Amino acid sequence: MDKDQERRGPGRRAVVTGAAVVATAAAVPAVLHATKGAEHASPAEPATPVRNLASPTPHTRARGDDRPNILLVVTDDQPKDTEWATPQTVDWLGGHGVTFERAHANTPLCAPSRASIMSGRYAHNHGVLDTRHPYHLDQHTTVQRQLHNSGYRTGLFGKYLNYWHTGDNPPHFDEWLLQEPVAYYNGHYNDGGTVRNIPGYNTTVIKNRALAFLKSSRTDRRPWFAYVATRSAHEFNIPEKKYAHARVPEWPGRPSVFETDKADKPAFLRKAEHGLAAGQALRARQLRTLLSVDDAMRDFRDQLRSLGQLENTLVLYTSDHGLCWGDHGWLRKSVPYRPSLEVPCRLSWPARGLDRGTSDDRLTGHVDLAPTLLDAAGITPDTPHDGHSLLGTGDRDHLLAEWWWNRQDKEPIHTWATYIGRSEQYTEYYRTRLDNNGRPTDGDGKVLFREYYDLRADPYQLTNRLHGATPAQEARLGIPALAKELNAARRAGS
Image 1: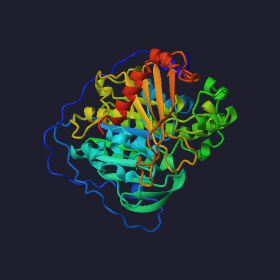
Image 2: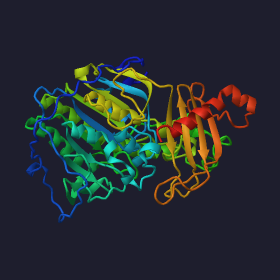
Image 3: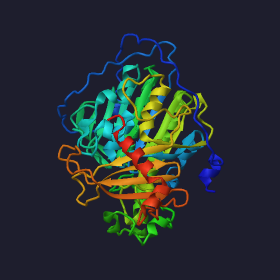
Image 4: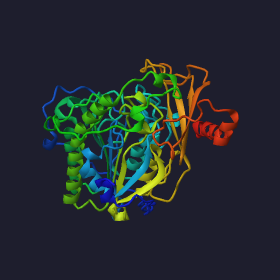
């Protein structure tokens, strides 16, 4: 048992309870609270005109409004098994919260996964299928709109959606420091409507602005929602200078890194040749950048404690997707294997008893996050969700993950969809590719390859049991029923 497990106690099923707080009555007339000023100022280049995509209409906090504040932290490309770099985060949200042991990205690609986090919808429903078409997201479906319209003060700090025009203000946020393109040092930001360069390390810059947003709650009594999205731990990894040479513990790899016989894998993966050394180097680079994220989480906790808001703030920490460290020869995301799909996910909310260091082994996905936050705020969603709130007892027996081959990828990875069950995973690859507008119109959709893994007997997905299987063997594995379930999930809600 590792130290983190010792702190959390034995792995056990802990259903998250403490259902939603009832929403308050109609908001009183709005009052604008100025929160930007000298404490935010940084040297800047001349301002660039911006386009307003939304007109914020803030609300003052109704008397007796005891809804929780919400802090959502989303890292970039952070797989599981990175706890060494985030001990303070694990101590806070793992030791004093709930760890979702089977949390998944529903699409292992940055913009689609973030759109799922914001909307509670699968990518085939929200429409952001690659990283180049962020405006496909219907902003009416977002959690920030529903929180904002119900009286929450909303803030965005860091990464929003890839290829978002820096000069466009993010809809339904009262305050923001949006970086695009995202860089580790000396980034280009939309700072509350002014486009400028700000010196400094990405994690520190957005942390400081988020802290100022939290601090302004001393005078602005509305409940708040802060969305903090770091560059860490995305390639090319540049650690903060103080951590540039941090000593990272050795990693011996896992069985999937040493897989030599890949005849049962799809053609593109058979050609992948990244091994242990490449995986170790990538892991070390990622961990060094995450040390600064852990510092930010420490500072958020200290700020909440000093404000007297630690008890009634729901804090949720996750990553947009995982990453392979040489697993099956692969050194990226985008594949339907556990290192690419599984993400860290921890939640703490002491006021509702979610501070006991428990584990929850339900099958969860990014589509569950927006329903959870709205449930906590006592808001009935007014747009459809594919997920469900994690605050109740709702469960599922399978989860959908999906990915589309897009024109950024020169290699023919192919589009795929996968059925993730409690103990098995079934995947189909399709002859489909996104067109220049990010729509799946190229190809006939024919199934090109299939995989089935027994996740209990084969957690590292080494043996594709459909390789050379007869129809009778497929029937014994339940493949016809799984294929039908997968097909239904791919079309649900569309």
